[in-house]
Image (cartoon, rainbow, N blue to C red; front, side, top):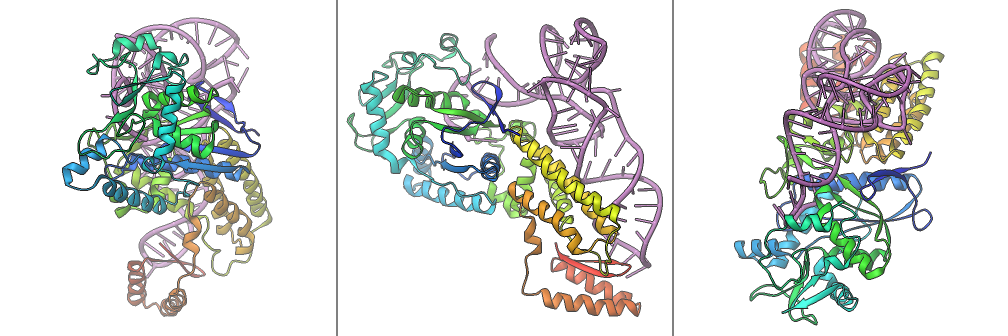
Length: 465
RNA sequence: GGCGACGUGGCCAAGCUGGCAAGGCAAGGGUCUGCAAAACCCUCAUCACGGGUCCGAAUCCCGUCGUCGCCUCCA
């Protein structure tokens, strides 16, 4: 019964141990905010939300930091292109992303730092690397001395010498080595910049994460996460920066989610084959995307297309069917049926945890939930009362909640409930008189309002769609 | 060219420190029903291909083919 986590660093599932007892420090790379976020960004946020929720379920206190990179070349270019202030542009995308996270039922990160608000930390970090001999300044730019950091390449399992041949001829021959990367870039006219010991400039791409992680979580953290396209060079460089400075291992576990596949290719800004979160949420509830993510391993590529979206929607309805109320006039299920229900309730609870303990196998965990749904529905069909169904339904709602699915929303009370009860009751009276035309009309019109009426031998029930 | 991942029924997908192939969707048949919907029951795979190891492999090893990712900005 121990949690095991796949670590990109070792390429193995390892037992999960935290630096501090029962506390998890987790840093997840957020988006660079220069355009509308797409569903791939949402996938990553969902994956780490699910991981976080399960860790909390397991009794860990999770300190979760997700950053916004709000200064970089693309933001500046884009701002110039649309004639906007870069900060304003970034702020707009940050606000929008925050809203998306909420719609997707993603728990807000404990802390959401942004690069522009941490400039002193970043400058201090760079200066310390210079002081330690891991970085050098040339004409207002500062570069990281890659070869000075012995373990460079340990995350992406690359060899510095083999890498060299693959590097394109460096345009910038002021660098000591083509492998060296920028920690600080001097400002060109018109660009946003900050004063530093090396003149006006802005941070390079990787340094902000190292600096913010250290500022908000300390020198050593438990989990560092992001999409697997960040393994190299971003995370490799973060390791180089952070470990050169602190002299300690940066993160114990490096976790990476697979890429979302759109028509056989990775969905990405550069390929231009993207579906924005905004567009997706226009047509589908957020839980549909979560269901898609849950239904496959987080490290594997996720197939994204209309058919799969539809399947996820249906799966969600299936899960939802488990929490429907007892049949009208239910008089209790036979003992054998109730025993099976109790047994499955227990089996699901255990199976769920076993799966999630195995590197967050959410697809397996979901399978257990569906097994429980089937047995609950069997019991209901056998005449189980609400009281008899309740414990198993409670498990279903609780565990779905651990995955971040909002099953209970269908049970929330609406102001209109009493009126619907009345309409359904009137309709029942009509049905007794075989007034089919009118009763069908009531059913159809209620459906248009999002109310599903279901008839059975002993009466009718209804629920929100 | 270098490094890595993956290839399971019509679709999505779990299982991969070896021991009778989860689950969801779709499809077909049935029960229930005025109709509809829902629910329930039944049916539906030997795991890309070829070798090897083993009493035994979807799970381990080698090879082939295919798909994808990183090596440049990228969740």
